[in-house]
Length: 455
View 1 (cartoon, rainbow, N blue to C red):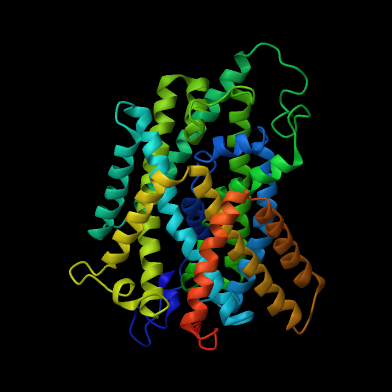
View 2: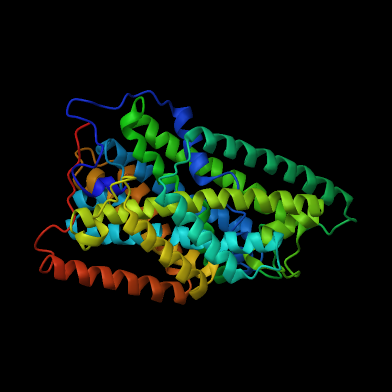
C-alpha cells in the first residue's frame, strides 16, 4: 500500500511489463478471508461483550451492514482506479488532495496501531501458557520479535497463509462441535435462551450496543485489501466488487456464528478472568483444558503472523510518505541497503508498539484503530457518491443511496466510539493536519501525489 504514495517504487516493473490477470473471483474471496482471518472476532470478543452487555452477535451484524455498503463503494472505486486500490487515492482524486492527505494520515494511524494491539494480545495469550512470566517481559519479547524478523526481511508466503487459514478453519469446526455438545448437556433452559445473544431485555441498551459495534467493526478490518489486487484479476471491474462484498458477507456470517456459540456457553452475568483473551476461556468452558490450549495457541500464532505483517505494512507506509517528503525524508525515506527494507521505520513502529503496550489497553488501541479506519471508510463512500452521482452521467438512485447509507452508518458507528478513543484519535489527526498545512503552506501545494497508473 505504501508504494501508492508515489509514482514508482523500488523494484518496480520495467516500462511495458505488466502483471498477468490470472486471479478469479474465487481466488479473491479466499485471499480476503485469509487477510481478515476465520477467527477474526475471537481476540476482540471479551471487550465487545463487556461494552455491549453481552449482545456481541447484534454488534457484529450491525457492523456487517456498514461494511457491506462500504464494500460496494470500494468495489465501484476499484473500477475507476483498477491499478490503485487505496482509500486516500480515491478521496484525493475525487474530492480534494487535502482530504486525501487527511484520509492517508488516518490510515497511517491504523497501520501503526495494528502491530501495537497485536503486541498486547500476544503478550496476554502467552501469559496464559506461562503465567509466571510477567506481562511486561512478554511485551518486550513480542515487540522485539516482530521488529527482528522484519529487519531480516522475513516474509510469509501466500501458501503458508492458506495453510494457516485452513488450520484455523479446522479449529473453528472443532470448537463448534464442542459447543454443541456442551449446550446439549445443559439442563433445560428458559424459552429465551437461544434468543438472548441477539436481544436480552434484561441487559439491552441501545447506547451500549452501538458502543460495542464501534469496537466489533475491527472484525472486518482488512477486507479493503482485495482492491490492491486489481491489476492481477480477471475482469476487475466486476470481480473486485463481488469479492469485496462476498468477503464481508461470509466474514459476518462466520463471525456471528462464532460469537453466538460463545454467548451460549458463557452467560453475560459471569465475568471473564481476562477480558482481552476472553474467547480462550469460553473455549475452555466448552471443551476443557485441551480446547483452551488449542484455541489459545491458534490465536497466538495467527496474531503473531498478523503483528509481523502489519508492522512491515506500517513501515512501508511511512517509507512511502517519507520518500514523498510528507514525513522527514532523511529518517522515514531511508532504505537499509543490505536487506532493502525501511529499517528505521521498522524500529520506529516497534518502539511505538512497545511503548503503547504499556501505555494503553487493547480496547483503547482497537477503538483508536477503528477511529482511523472509519474516517477512511467514510471517505471512500463520499468519493463514490461524488464520482458516480454528483459527476455521473446517468445519476441512478442507487448511485446516491448506497454510498450515502454507507457514509451515514459509518459516521454513526464512529460517533459511538468511547470519548477516550475520540480524544486520542483527534489528537493524532490534529497533529497530522497541522503538520500537513505547515508543510504545504496551507495545502497550496500537494503533500502527497495521487498519480494513478493506467489499467
